[in-house]
Image (cartoon, rainbow, N blue to C red; front, side, top):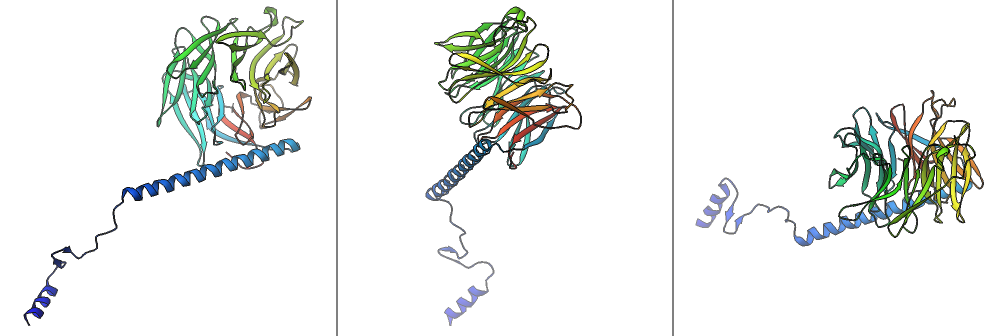
Length: 419
């Protein structure tokens, strides 16, 4: 009887029943162990590898498709997107290894350097530098692992600047500060993945080259310049040799204008590109340099005499071979040259403001011995394209970035909706 009364008394007590081993409530889910955390981490890593592999396969398929379309001669439309407002006449386009485009540009009203980047959620704009009037002559490139970098001119201090992300934020550092340096800068990465910049020393009238050695910027003088010279275009040959096409002078009265410089054993040498002109008023400007898959240097450039034309030169068998890809009056300028995946030279270029066809940007491609020219965009009013920058996506699609009426535009030549 005593035992039964004890059980009944216990059953009527409020709260949980507590015995010697502790409460009889559930202890909850077991805490994570080192082994379980490692398993989760490994699964995430496996998923990331799978996603990366799928993205690479998708890029290969798009590249193959782009090559097939180019070989077929099919008409491929341009898809034009307005990215941002407030862009001026300094624009630079590049693609990251995953195929997303980015555009560095100068905002003239705010006097800032900005970058617009595309992603799965669309375009986003970030401000890189606001210290004075910064961002003119900007040049964007991605390192082989995919880190963006920008060379640009600080007009307030007359310095050459370099910007790159440092963790989650952008870091800006001076490259050269002695005198008036940094205009017309052009950035490219060496095959070893180190940034290099060609630019103008306006004060000393010299073409300079800077290359990061892992600890500091190594500076070199490439060639003297006429006071109206500059506009260097930097590229690396397939064997890793740095090369620069640049303008030395303005008219043929002072001799050849477009020069090509290369470095051998740390020593720079240069030679003229265009042939001797019978007219001292002959004028060449705005060279854009690229290498073919065979390692042949090629240059697109403006050419003015009695009317305007756009010229293409490629060095074959030791001499420069010239052709004209646009000659409809004095209205084509600032070409940007690239080679397609099939090795076709292509040029995006701006039209002169008086162009009656209301086409701000043109695109030229060579088919055998002839050139085809098409509009990238047609407007309702006649507005000039400014600072056109041309590149190919990793998928092999031609693209261009430019400014029209203060709006930053991105155009890509593809039959499919893409960034």
